[in-house]
Length: 114
Image 1: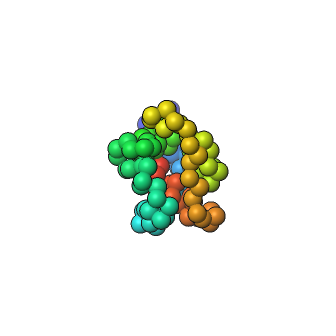
Image 2 (image 1 turned 60 degrees about the vertical axis):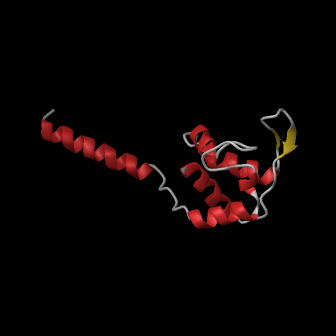
């Protein structure tokens, strides 16, 4: 294989892969943070430090490489599962006050972008 044909093949493969990867939706960070504030999420979570709940950066680091990360987090914030707090007590996670799938996905994608 010549160098030129190898470069052509590599470029073709990269283009094919790029076309198969879904484009990341633009995150409206301002809207996501407003929704989080409206729901008192920052009472238990901070962006980069552990409070009553884990830091959003820690959540993102744990989940962002998983293919179902968005769905996992949307389910978590809409179903109110039992969670264990650092002091060992259990409580139900607060349910977000919106049913708008776009708002929910935007919030989750903002968290995963951190």
